[in-house]
Amino acid sequence: MTSQTDFQQIFNTAPQTQASAPGRVNLLGEHTDYNDGFVLPTAIPQHTTVSLGFSPDDRHHFYSAELEEWAHFTNHELVPEGFVSYVLGCIRVLEKIGHTVPPLNLFVTSSVPIGSGLSSSAALEVATLRGLRSLLHLDLDDVQIAKLGQQAEIQYAGVQCGIMDQMAASLADTDHLLFLDTRSLDRKLLPLPSQAEILVIDSGIPRSLATSGYNQRRSECEEAARLLGVPALRDVTDPNIVKNLPEPLNRRARHVINENNRVLQALKSTSAEAFGALMNASHASLQHDYEVSVPGLDRLVELLQKTPHVFGARLTGAGFGGACVALVAAERAESIGQNVLSSYTHTGYKGRILVPDLGMV
Ligand code: ADP
Ligand code: MG
Image (cartoon, rainbow, N blue to C red; front, side, top):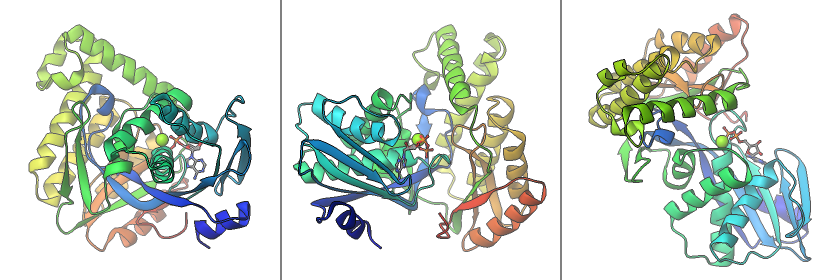
């Protein structure tokens, strides 16, 4: 069943417009975006679709197929929490820049796993904003959509996110890596290393400490930048400078400096082997210097790294649980994923393959 017919069944009328946006996985450049640094995500096949029409009354009517959740409210009513805060956040940020958004019928459906670090939230924001752009004939480009989506998430969903996720949902595709300078927003689409494809496995470990850990790392980085006398850690390129910092700020800063250098190095690495080596180094740095890994993620990464035809593997996303990404030989992602998953679950963990999309999400 398509989301169009779902909308029809729920609202008893056809949608006026429909828009989609993909989830993303970050290959290199972890915990760099809030340090004004460099990132290298790609879009994944799973995407979120938002169908829209004008409401017949003075209330918004939102429905999420995945959450099986309704929300009905007028524009003046206090907003409920949860998924509505992301959607209404998009409406509010448009209103703040002078657009009028009438009450809407809105239907969301998605194949992006929710809460697994593949950025279902940015996919929802970008799909919603694209839908509103089309419905209301707004003159917004893809970078503006990304920035508005980020503001919606920060101001209305209460998540202090960087710009990577929304830029990836808005500008990346599944055939390329999106190199992004998160300070200038300069960007470039690059081919994936040749003869390679992407494998993403969910560790099955909930990211329970992710928010507090993320906020703590953010403030450690800000403090390190302040002590080094630079606006952001992006402005440092020599990792030796961190010996002037106290523990653990020295290791936090070293991760960010080395990680930014790795992204820049990856732009020059045409071979999958060289790219994979950078991913392995990134994991070691996230594990020891940034300390955002957990034993389950280390186990999964270790299993991936020692499997033939795997060029490199690391945790992806904020850490403390969530998913691992690997670069593997073309056409082998599914079989490698299944083998690794079987060894991983043997040791008591529960994981699943997220990319390639095996249609189980
Ligand atoms: P992720 O890593 O998937 O982005 P987040 O915690 O940042 O995890 O965002 C997940 C939240 O985004 C969900 O709790 C929900 O509020 C919202 N969301 C994402 N996708 C959907 C969807 N299809 N339907 C409703 N809400 C969604
Ligand atoms: Mg998110």
